[in-house]
Length: 91
Length: 435
Image (tube, each protein chain N blue to C red):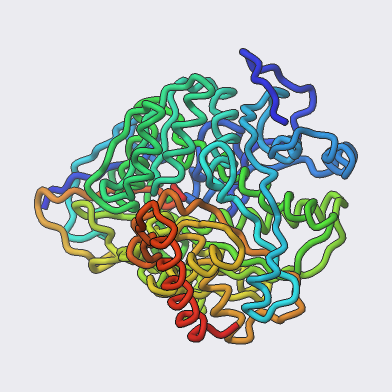
């Protein structure tokens, strides 16, 4: 299940300045675990100590906020695009 | 009185801000163009040396400053002695006696940013600060994600400052807001999507073109501009805090910064401390903050906006959790009102106080009314209502609710007949209104 993940600027130091990463995962949690395998330390930036997604980071699957879908368990299909976007913006 | 702009930025010997600090985890950063914490994604806020402020700023030094937001320059995150001053701020604080009487309040004030300069909304405050800082940080192109007012302001002040400008708006905005941006000749991107989608796009664009996005990578500086709405009210009330404020909530930033402004003036000894209740206003068709408040949640569940109040239609509000926190700890409230109540609110303010506000202001007045009727504002509280935008920009919202002119012939009898008819209509309407 290869998906494309868009990495926000504050996390690009983990990915060697790459803004887009291809990785495997059937849902958001699995994608996060796959990212952690390739780029150790990245998951702790996105999840708190209890493993929940941090409240100031938004995830989108093909432009839809996962809070309108199935949250961290939102299922992914091959070719889906997952965007990780800082929540603090605008207004 | 406004200041002229110097061609280059000169620096003061005593910048009062010390850097950026994460509001969540406390991590500290240099005062550059960044807006989220690299460790936890929390919002970054400007930190100041309040001891320096306490020693150097007095009521007199402020009163002797320019008649604009820059009289509070030491509380704003810029280094230059020559900020971009287009006369922004120091808008009227009007004692609203007729509206107060109608609602059953004793001391009601309107902070009227419908006549803020240069583009008739509170956004001129945040943009003046953001573009001054943008220039200091070396940006030559500025940008924003906007529901309309911010686009007007960014384009206008960028034009004045000679900065290139590219703004992003949802494609369905009111005509007045689109035209009121295009006139300054920026590049305007009208995005097929709602504000939250525009904002997300801009978040992804922000770091790729080397532009200064006022409400993204410059957001810590930008948002500080709203503190001046707190400072001015204190000064205009004769160096006193009000008892209660009511303000519209979009991202929640304005609300939290008015709070910060009051706190800072207390902290540096410019005003005596007293409790101020903070109440927020949302449109029912986009009320994620009001819903979180009602349910006592410490997180916001985003919504898809559906309301005429486009200027505050943010379904995914960045500072929502902080707005809830402030309303809770100050014993305030957050309410939402229907689109019809918003139109009625716009008309009520116009008819009682002669102020034509846009939908955000209608939302705020309708919420004020609702809170008073529910006994959530006491009649003897000194209450300040923030009107943040101008009704001429959202004429569509009230079209069909304001009647028509009486068309007559250029003859005396035509006038007399029309007048009689108008007075009869007036009497009929009058009998239906409780005064």
